[in-house]
Image (cartoon, rainbow, N blue to C red; front, side, top):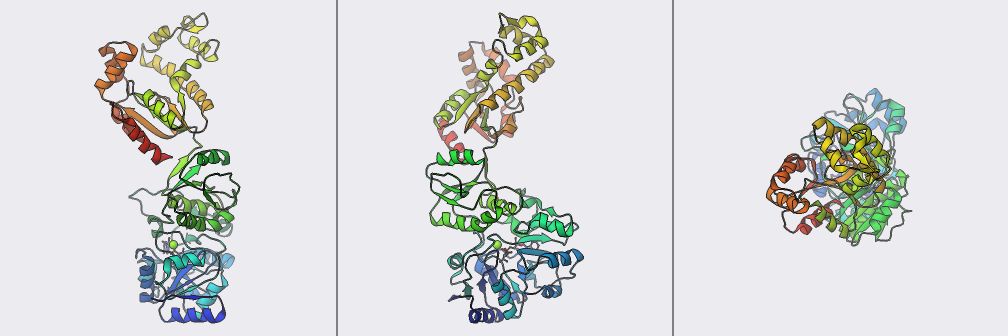
Length: 522
Ligand code: TXA
Ligand code: MG
């Protein structure tokens, strides 16, 4: 198919309208992103949209109208809340979902009994609809799964040869697709955030909910309120990882990355190859630039991209929503005190693994060493221990560990008492020491309740025989004593269930296992 490239001049819009009238496909500018339009009430024309985009047929389209009055025939009822929103906002980057009327073909509504309608702000778009003499169904004019096009050149990249015409209307003003709100259920619910924010909508119609799929990944068995939410979206070729960090930590993190790209804010001091997407705390500028930035990264051949995580409020919610999808919900959480919590029973060889992690640039925080430090001569904790276990556990200002251990491990209650004093103090001190990428080496990570302070948890396991051998050699105790110690700890199943990764350390090459994990998480 030969694709005509048209301008926004009156005669070109007329040409485009003729194409729509005769059942053809025209890509056109809107204030949000470019749309791929066809007569919404012509089933065959609508089917060709799905074909050109490679879009699953159960993903419904938005019907674009030129005038508010054109909405009435498309829906069962323009409900009072719908009327309020239409009067307050239209024309706007806002799509409203209502019960559909019989004139809307199933192809357009993806087989649903509801229909999405929107009156775009862009004058060219409205003029095209008016001239076509019909309402226009238009998804974003990208190949399904790719970022929506905000410039004509991206429409040309995706759609040349697949559509009859493309109207070049310059850059889109908003940059992310319209806000989608459904009024078809009990409470108005945002299915896709955009430039018309929750606060703006609530000012007009009162309480508005946000569909869980907007900010979170749905479980496999959950159904998305909006079919579009279940598909892979906005995905560049690169693997995108979002970094939840303040400006300085982000800069330190990405600037240490070789062979990677950054997707950062305008003012970030980034020294690796990067593309910016707007200003920090300015959702509007981020929205405008995001999709363009994702496409630029592809053009540069980026394989791995570390992106700054936007806020979740106002227009930034739309940016956040698109970016977490582009990143397949992959968020590196550097705001947690510890990058990695490393745990596992005695004799599994954690220290060996820490040594290797240190060579990879991690700061290692050894909780056993910290446990000694917090009860050093003159510490407040020593006095606390004395009050709990007897004055005589301190001799010449130093803790008599043997005596304390004897008393603390006599009964379960005594052990719990010791842990309740020691664990919070140890974790607090470890947190004070945490800086940059760090590993908390903590055999009692779970017992201390420190798991939530770690971005990822790695457990180390090993076979019982190996562990017994290691413990006997290291601590000079008998086999029976070693076994007793192992049996008092969590079993391998517990660690596997509560950790993100498990490293099997029976003497095999742990480097391969660790390299794979580190590559996946950061
Ligand atoms: O800004 C926009 O809305 C752009 C421009 C071209 O107007 N259009 C756009 O369309 O983004 P599209 O098809 O790429 O996204 C429409 C979204 C999809 O996620 C779809 O699943 C959802 O709206 N949608 C459409 N009709 C729906 C319905 N009846 N119920 C629930 N979700 C619906
Ligand atoms: Mg789309």
